[in-house]
Amino acid sequence: MEIFPRRRLLHPYERSLIELTLGDGKYEEVLGKVDALRKKVMSVGKEHASLCAKALSKREVEDRLSEGVEKLELVFQQQGRAVDDLLSIAKVLRAMPVVDLEMPTLCLVAAPNVGKSSLVRILSTGKSSTIFFFFLRSLVKKLPMEHRISGFLN
Image 1 (cartoon, rainbow, N blue to C red):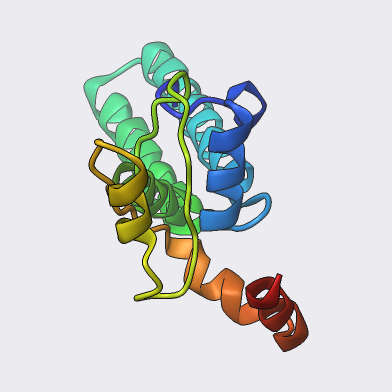
Image 2: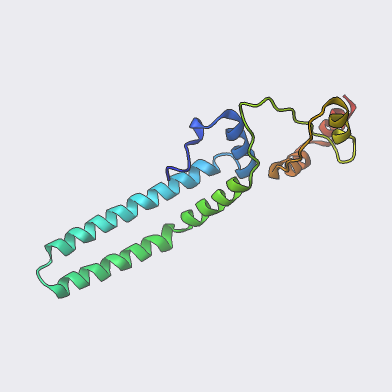
């Protein structure tokens, strides 16, 4: 869980990227569910380890152990989806573009084939790079038509 930092500790750019890509609150929700699952598994494990330690015979230990395993399986049946959700989030986050937050960066966002790369080539000796953001296409689709048109006209 330590490799998934709390959202409030992230740079504002990274926070916005996570919010736009995953949806508002999804990151924290999944982290909370996984943490709750971790606590439940630890609790069940400690409870049954204690019962096994107090057992008087090998047979009793085996019975307590199998009860503990069954209880852990039940916990995972009920709450294990959180781990799958976390793996899915990790996959999405690894696929997101990495931006050096200390380097000045210019973003040109425009319709296809309007000359963004040509403009960069004329104004700079540098090479432009293209990065695809998952949320941009859906973000543009959600904007009312008058906002999209006025954005192109301004």
